[in-house]
Amino acid sequence: MNRKEFLKYGAGSFVVPSMFNGLGIAKRANSWINSLSSAIVDTDKVLVLVRLDGGNDGLNTVIPLDQYGRLTMAREKVIIPENKVLRLDGLDQVGLHPAMGKMRDLYNEGKLKIIRSVGYPNPNYSHFRSTDIWMTASDSDEIIVSGWAGRYLQNEFPNFPVDFPNEDMPDPLSLEIGSFLSLAFQGPTNAMGMSISDPSDFYELIGGGIGEVPNTPAGEKLAHVRLIKRQSNAYGQVVKDAYESVNSQGEYPDTFLGEQLKIVSRLIAGGLKTRIYMVNIGGFDTHDRQVDPADHTRGFHAELLREVSDAIAAFMEDLRFQGTDKRVVGMTFSEFGRRIISNFSDGTDHGAAAPMFVFGHEIEGGMLGENPFIPLNATPADNLPMQYDFRSVYATMLQDWFCLPSDEVQLVMRNDFPILPLIANSDCVSTSTRDQYRNAGQTIISAYPNPFTERTTISFQSDGGQCLVQVFNAHGQLVATPAHGAYAMGEHQLDWDSETLPAGHYHLRLQNGLLQQVRPVLKVR
Image 1 (tube, rainbow, N blue to C red):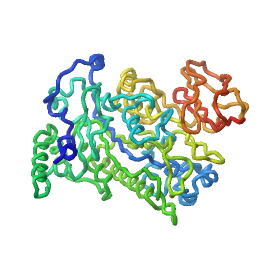
Image 2: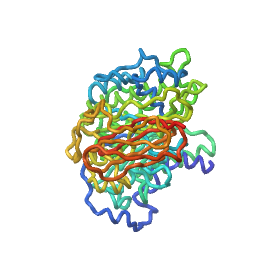
Image 3: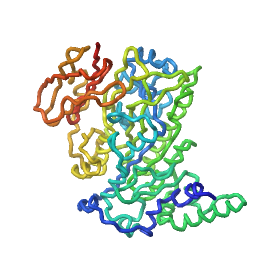
Image 4: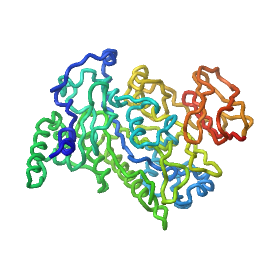
């Protein structure tokens, strides 16, 4: 057995070595941890992360019907027929992919929040780098080695892993099914979770068997590694006990994601105090054969979206059946979206912003954000402009779901990000959840003249307090920040000189607390 095989089948498949009751771990002083002197926030709430690995095509997932003509011109190879798009209650300008019928039902029941055009400034189109950015919540131009969830868990359990598990926290802090432990769960000094490589390995753990191995010297070594792995798994028994304490579950689709969420629901119902779970589904890197050329409602992307929709709906129903639905919130994320235009292989290429879905009994259902702007003659360079920074979603979950104080949220997230209206029924919401639609149909940021040659006047509305005005190019890169500071309530104007920028499409973005809007502008020669 070579080193690669050992790592694949060794302890890392279940538990990071640092989880073994602190064995082999040096206790290190760390000024970052020492500064976290506040008491642990007591909570039984759970967050489930659903990773759509590969970069999900947002424009074929949440479809802007008010710009369907432009969309057809831009992505003729993959466009979903307008009469097949699933309509959402109360909305006539946007719909869901026809494979997402069960998530459409969740939306109509008020149990699904759709956040439009989520991303980050200066997006990176590498799967590996962009995934790291999402996992760590870093800026696109910085490298950090701790994950956002790991920093949160280290904040809550600053002594980990010394003397863990213990009576106060006998269970894994986080648990990932479907891959090795992600960077998201890496704390400043230790990995903060347990990973199980796939559902079959989980059932092997629960059943106590070691599985079949080849009758070869390598097979004997593999059997030994698996045995040691189980014996050294400090959390194996508590996970097994939680799983076996649940007698029945609801029906799940026979899919990889369905099986993962079935395990998560059962462990939650079994009483694990684990706060964050992650499940994974791959295949979203749809450069080719995204759709069936004969029927665009079918194809690889449709199959993936159906698996996501059906599995999440089954999970939600099982949570209700188990009586745990008020304790659990989930959200989907992908490392980036896809380009506006389709390519010549019946697919789409790496892009920037994409929608996120937040689901649960306690979320504030509805749509957050506006339909993205589709240029009249889209080019391969054109991307969807970012409306919301993904780190605002993370910050909201920490503050409004896990009840982390706002100053500690800033410490974990390494910056101050606006809190979004995502959680409806929370006993710790400390920010306004004003009506997100009160500015619907109003222009709160604009430019005149537009089109312009070198200079234009940007006008924007402020509710008072910190305002951020940004300019993004068609690639999603941040090219200017005309305003960043405190502004009084009312209308404000500023002169923007774009002399150093080339002609082309740009997007103005205003962020003022929960108030935000993105508007297109055009620079001409």
